[in-house]
Image 1 (cartoon, rainbow, N blue to C red):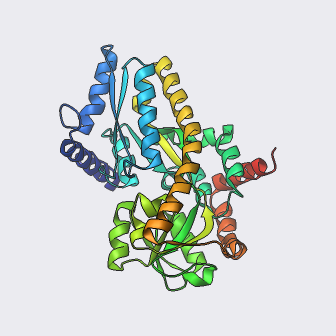
Image 2 (cartoon, rainbow, N blue to C red; image 1 turned 90 degrees about the vertical axis):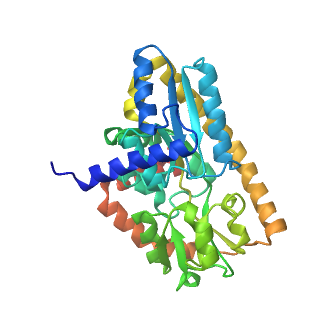
Length: 354
């Protein structure tokens, strides 16, 4: 029987996830795939669900703290029927790896970037378009809308659904020693981007050299000179320790890309409607609490980076020059991806308060 490349990758993902979970003390049978299968069997027998949730951030990151609160709420409100074990630090691989594991039945839940999800639903590509949101208020207004909820549900046929979103801040460029005030400052610099077409395209339009890699590889790549800089929110300087290497953070705020909490569609359908409601309520509560926590986390990260790491924050950035350089990309994406055009129109309506 001929095996497709996609089937082969999914099989490898399942094996990799099982090995990773065994190494970190996963389920009682030391298998992620076994955990998901056991969840279904337990549900049929009136037992509990023991779910695994993976993400690639450190345990002191605001997102991990909020996901921990989410898991505690779900356990309490379901009287222990739904238990969620969080596996942080990229233990299960990249975000794409974790999505493949969910599709293969080897993982139940994951926190991933909306840009990663652009590979599975073209609508998500709109979030990776530079300067799609004017400011935090515009960003929050849209992300809390019914339109955003429809985007979360657009991957049901891919084997997973979005439950809620978490603010991941505004992304800006930072390098070892070069201030990025205009796109011209990026010329010749090797800049890490997420392994997504939209991010590679953005960097090409801005004149830099895109180097796609997972978040976990960034620190060492900065140290060894594989890359000259990267782009992320301010917390990456501290929780990711990037500020130990990069000393200039230029606040261009070219993107506000949400994180999305996703869950296996197969597992979701096995959970009772009552517990589904509890999960969704806890997810919404986490989103709201995270908004407050996030602002504090950014303030603390900037202070720590300045005072203990010697990072310089550059605010006199020509944002209009960045907008002009990436406008052709926006037009190309709207033409290439009908879903992006539709979503951009809805985001524009949120800007105008319609």
